[in-house]
Length: 473
Image (cartoon, rainbow, N blue to C red; front, side):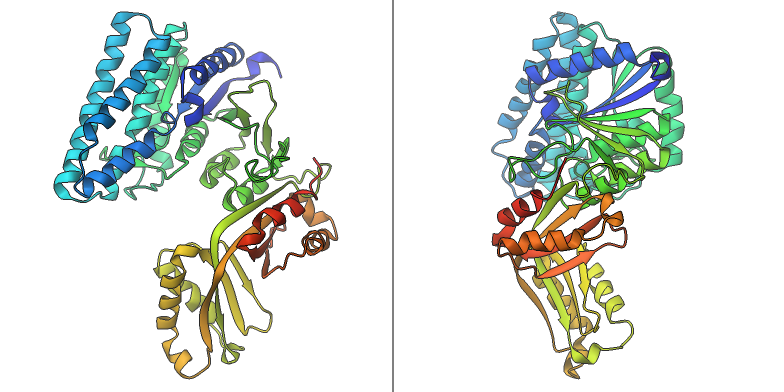
């Protein structure tokens, strides 16, 4: 690729990438290199690692009337940001200006905690205002560090450019309104050679009330901005070498997957892989933008490239295996269900009313039972909702019972090559059978990119190992 054809790059750095001075030094080097190779670069940054958790846990504490740690927490946040700032910025005037902004944010934070304490309640709206403070502080430090190293940079609050609805804690962007603000606010800065350092994770309603895009939303921020700017590529910088074949904490032999399709990544994200936020994928797919997942601490590693949906058949058929833990299976069963229309619809309407999302459904062809997985801590509430929904049918014995299993794990193998390769399911079940693992339920999506199996919670490690051995990278 000719250097001049590399126009616009959006890079997102997660919390561990800005966790301490050594990590920030890596970020500065990465941005400097990108700045030399691309005509425009946008940086999206998370809060320093651990800060968002600290902000929220303090909000919950004050809501319960415990404000004993407010002062020490504010002091800790100030010192942590100041330490990072002084590591990179020696100019006294610049230091004072940035710390002035940080102090204003901390004062605002103290007022928010105070308001939560007075109300005795941490509302979703208040939590969003608190949660975004970490990003607001980190971008100011990062922009100052970039400036001090000779790169023209400016800290920007996404509350000024990403417009969302008012569904606090998991807001949806208004793409058209965001596009207009990006054109007004971000483009002119890029034209002037500035590297905008934008807060990840947050946006604001049309009235300017701060919102967040849900946990992991910094990836989403990068995708929204990339789509609005018609970027050429998005690089997500994290603390592992790209998307892995399995969770390296459970499977030490896990390797990087060099190429995946969008659909494979969406399946992996949905089934618990921790690298990409599921919603991240959509704006990037729709805009046809190339996506890479890279390691801040090992920047020479090629990481993973996410490509369009052409199946990469030359690669291994199974790309990755993932686990969703802490699930229980709910079963609605009864001989009277046979051929009765609407049972499935009513079942899932009742589940939807409890606000629960269902990761897996398995229905016997006899239609005598429907079985689906839910997060373990919601199972009792869902059983009660279903017993209420089907009270008449249970009375008439058309439905024999609604029950929840013990805790289970969903293991999912993912690979778009599976849809063109006969015998994959056989190999999967053979691998588990050889280790004496019983499969309780199965679901294969019509996408044929994944097969999900439910096994007992205690078979998690052994099951993952057995399936991981099928992967050939």
